View: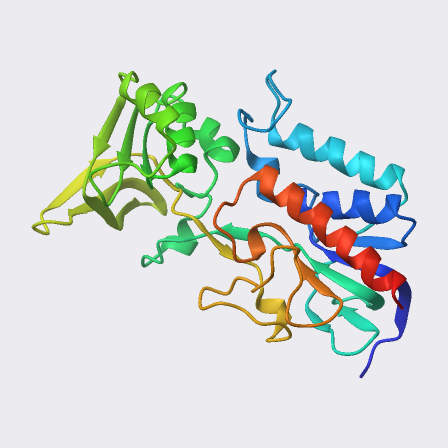
Length: 311
C-alpha cells in the first residue's frame, strides 16, 4: 500500500555527515526548503573521530563530534530540517522525487545523496556475534573498555595508524597487523608510530580467525602472507580499520554505481539522473576526507539550486 506523502521539499539530503550537513547549510542559505535524513545522530563517521589535525583552520584540539555538532547547529539555524528516519528506498525519475522511509514518504524536486559509508568487515566466522565482545570498528568509541589490556588493530591506512596511536596510550600492548610490509598511511604517522614503545608491527600478515572464550575475544589468529605460518596473538580486542563500504543499498539501482557500490558522479556531483547529486564518501572519488566531503556538499547544493532555478 502506497504511503501518503508527508511533506514536499525543494531538496532532500540523504545523510547528515559533513557532506550532508554542508549541503544543508548551502541549500538553506540559498532560500531552498530542505531536509536532511539521518537515522542516527548527525555526523556520520566524522563524529567518531577523536582528534582532527588536517581540517583547515582547526589548530586546537577539536573532535569530529564537536565539529559536526557545530555544522548541524549552523544548518538548522538557516532553516534546514533534520528528519530522524532511515531512507529505505527512493524514486528519482521525473521532476518530483520520492524518498521512502519506514514511517512515511516525502517528495522533493532535487535529491542529494550523502549517505556516506560504513566500516568494512573482515567477514570471518563469528565476527558479527563478537561485535561488542571484543570486535570493534571504532577504537575511539570502544577503546576505553580495554584499558590496560592487549589489543590488535587490523589495517595500514590513516585510520589504523590513528587508532594505534590512540590505543597505545590506554592499552598495555598494541599489535598492528597489516597484509603488506609498509603502511599506506600518510607519512606523518610513520615517525610517530616508530616512537611508540608498546606497539608491535606484524607485517605481511592477516587476521584469519578469532580466539574466543565464553563468547568474548581472547586472541587473534594471524597468518603470514608469504608462507601461511600461523601465529596466535593473545588480546582482549580486535579493532578493524580496513576501509569502508558505501551506503547505497537503498538506491536499488536508481542511479549508476561502480563495482564497489559507490555512486558515479561528475566533479560537480551530478549523477546520471537529472536532479540527483552525490556528495562525500558515498561517491566515486580519489580522496575521502572531511574537507573533500564538505566541498562536495557545497557543490551539490549549488548545482541543485541552479537546477531548480531553471525550472
